[in-house]
Image 1 (cartoon, rainbow, N blue to C red):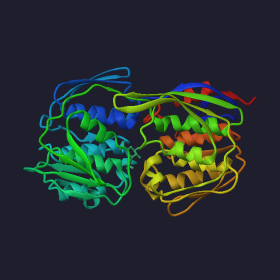
Image 2 (tube, rainbow, N blue to C red):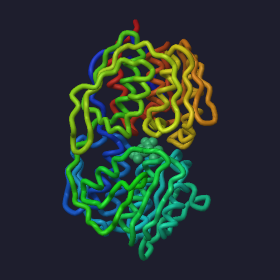
Image 3 (cartoon, helix red, strand yellow):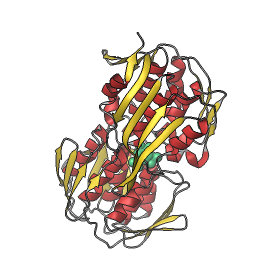
Image 4 (cartoon, rainbow, N blue to C red):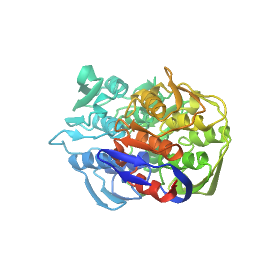
Length: 435
Ligand code: S3P
């Protein structure tokens, strides 16, 4: 169903979608399991670690910071160095395409008492960093960067100590919240973080499991330093953000039944399930269980008749990496679908508001980008060429559009390796060719 071409992938229309998929380990949890255990005392084994290049970037940076890490297929073994055991790196830390690596490491390095420079690929070097640099400077960190600290590379110098600060975040961002809580581990007083809307809480869950003193007070997260972190083994659940592609393909294809096994269903990640339910999708959650403090289940999706809805407000951060799929869902729904309050998508691996509208329009979709979302009308998709702008989630979105419509030729198809290296083979397995 898929063939490799010179710089991209050609996806054929799918006659049916059938079968079951196991998606890679969760990217957010994998980053945190490696980084937090590196700062812990003892050692930890992480199973089902994400095979994506982003989490590989975090491991590479940690090795450059003197952390011993062994990797055997999906198992990663980390030898903790303790909060104050990182070694000054002899070269620039390469975060690749990974905003999570750069922002979370910044929080740690702000208090680690060493000099380090963080950089990454062309996409990462365009992403906004003032959101972490400014609050970390308020806590006493010495951080500099391009354009006054707004853009990478970022350079961090040692300081005598960080202060406890009350942060009121302007953007709902788990990366910013996590960076500030991590810096709080090195502060001389309490750190408080108030977010404008709830975002993924893997940092809070894992730091607590490792013995950090972290509590909710009203709408604030408060971290009291002075407690060592104990290494913990982590069984990483399947990534909901990867499962989301199969859910949407299953719901939208007229001849579909697809099962996705072992998917993390942390409620701060599953806004797309709420959206699918509101649009009238047939999705079932089976075998709900708890794995290492995170809810996990199997998901089943069937062909569905959808209706257009409005998506906005606090639901957006709960589906921040999946919200682009709403543009595709809207093309197949009855009536108009609108997305608002999603201006953050302009700051992701690509300007996703623009790239989604451009790509889906090229395939015949009626999608108009607005200042903070899209207006989407029912459309019939046709064959076409699209550019993922080397954004993994855009490449996978356009693959779905090709399979559901008249096929697609996708430039920058290799980018799926950032979060889901086996995406193309999984697509080949579940989709049968139209002819
Ligand atoms: C992530 C948080 C989100 C998300 C990203 C991973 C994390 O970014 O888009 O893919 O692991 O904390 P923001 O915090 O910038 O919204």
